[in-house]
Image (cartoon, rainbow, N blue to C red; front, side):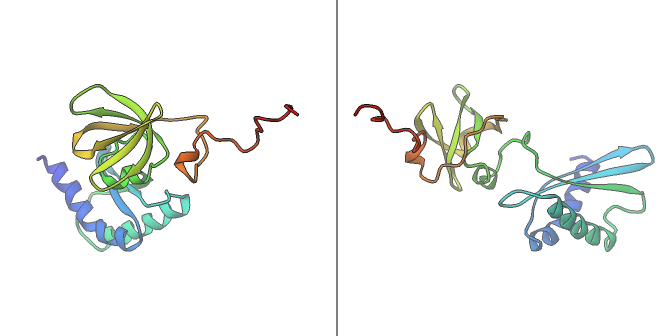
Length: 176
């Protein structure tokens, strides 16, 4: 473990409780040099996603903790608070839960990679629909999983059994 890793762990430990109290999960802490300053990037998330107002609220909570602690010492820093980002791997059960309905590419520890839509997410496994068939995957068996960007993402489906059904087409129309 490097000194930078140790410092980011200490920063995470310092701000985690305040973020949880405000309803946020701490997703990542990154500290990088930038000339005579440092840039502290902290990624947060919550169920339902993050808005700009949420980022402002999380920034206030983090700033208050950092102002009251000496975890960063005397060297100046710039704080950047952001959302988790779609390009981050799904590593925790809450990541999967927050992405139900999204297309994901899964690379298992063994076997070939596959893409499908997350249908259900539990603490130890997920159900992914792959070409119409449901596949249960243990999270422990996932090597890497990334949400795929969709420009024409289908809308939400209240009942997964109704996926693909349309109410606006009458198949018997014109047969009378």
